[in-house]
Every structure is written in C-alpha cells, then in structure tokens.
Image (cartoon, rainbow, N blue to C red; front, side, top):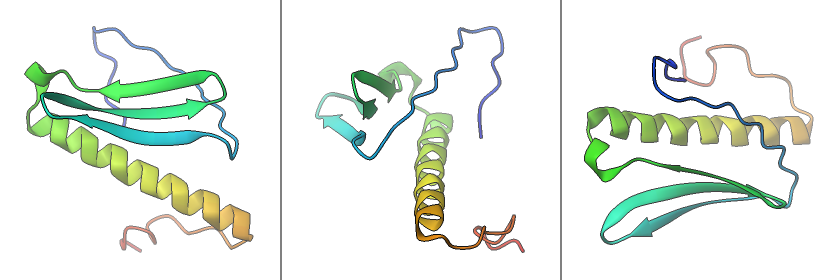
Length: 94
C-alpha cells in the first residue's frame, strides 16, 4: 500500500529490470538496513532513518516484503504461462 504524498517530498521512479537485475538487503550492526534494487547502471535504495523507527516503519517493511513476494509470484506465473490469479485468491479472501 503506497503512503499518501502529503506535504513532504515525493518522487516516482520506474526501474525496468531484465533478468540481470539484482535485489538485496544490506545490514549493519549500528545503523538501519538498506534495501537495494539494481538494474544496469541504476540503483534504487530504500532505508528508514534510525530516528524514525517505530511501528509504522515495521509495517512499511512488512508491506514491502509482501509486495516483493507478490511480484515474484506474478512474474513466475506469467513466465510459466499459468492462468491469472483472481482477485482475493492469493490472500485467501475469495
């Protein structure tokens, strides 16, 4: 779920990734982790400032992980030529 833009800064970026893209999570002992997606010569990083770590930051990180999992499922489904998943079937609400 994408947060509203509100009054803060915002940007929309598209990163077209082929099979040579990479994704990873860099962790450090004394700072917040960095989630990274790289394609060709472009890299997008996502991090949360240490002074902003709270329940909403945890919820965002979990939503990010869930969205990445859904993305992977859909890419594999299309690659295998499988039928589309109906709305609600993936999360068990159908």
